[in-house]
Length: 128
Image (cartoon, rainbow, N blue to C red; front, side, top):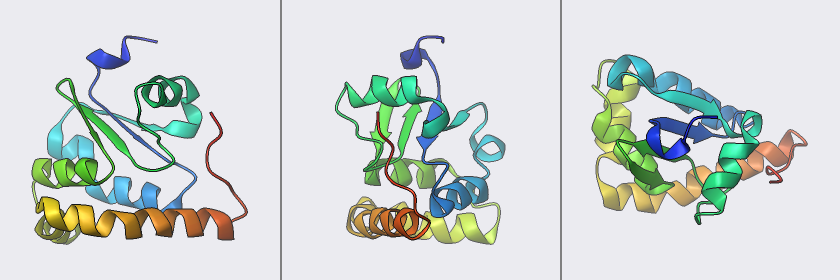
């Protein structure tokens, strides 16, 4: 594995249908360029690397962009700032999540939806 600190990457929960659809709809590589979009469950070494630095990926997505780490509400805020608004989903996403206060207010509901979805599917949080 290359040095995780040197990569632009997004770690998300690929078992969560909400997270997977969100990442797919964002069309990140198309809007912001080279980015490793990674399912944390397929990359437990990276999940553990960031958890050791205080980022619990069961509690939030993580974006590492140009050497800066954005996690949880800050992650969706940064993604909204980076997106182009090229389609309706990205326009709506940007209108909501470009405001840090709305990102912080709404992110707990997104996380609760993830947790409920995983529970209903009979899947748990990632153990790492």
